[in-house]
Length: 249
Image 1 (cartoon, rainbow, N blue to C red):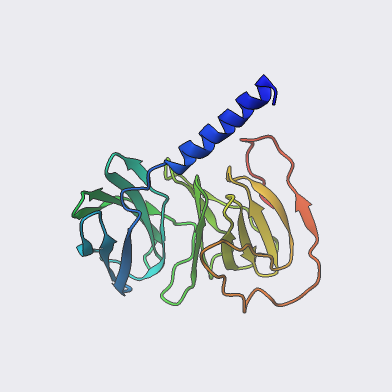
Image 2: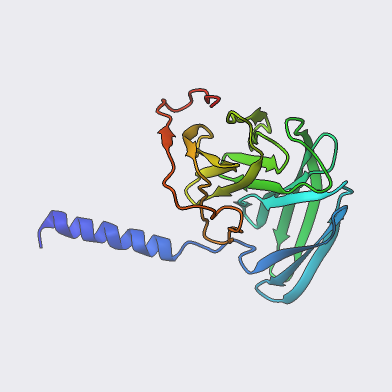
């Protein structure tokens, strides 16, 4: 084996060893369950730490008019503190409101102290509210995509700034029937018999006719309203440099 080959093998083995030694997140063996009513949501943290197991903390968020959808962000970890955001869409409020809660878990060897506080309430006045609407929400690392079944257009919300942008729709308008995502940050907004795919940067990537949708890795998609035909859709790709403005289509 040549000297260069030995160096390459050593580097590969070092990378594998470093990956194997990556410590688990402090809350890797903990989980949060939610329950309650459409107007008040309870949370409870259970699982195990290094020296104990059971349920550690609990609380309530709200009040709401009627919760339509909830989603949790990916965590950030600093030492033994894990921080996430919990996104709650109050679909019956007027206007529709996105409540952003900050959830902090401080994990010791024997306990997890959890604090959930309201971070910000964001008006989603572009969406049509209602007590009987179905609410759709999906996310990628940078954006939330939210809509209701009475809304002809969805909105995107920047996770970093919480700025709300109304997404382009179709003519004639069609109500939203699903918002789905995959693990690489692509999101499909389906509206009636048309769809738009948004990329990880939030810009429109593709649109066309048909009820296309995406699959993730942890949550099934209710497909009864989407698998309604096998005609290949006509699609249009949006070629643009990164950071360019979205088109209305």
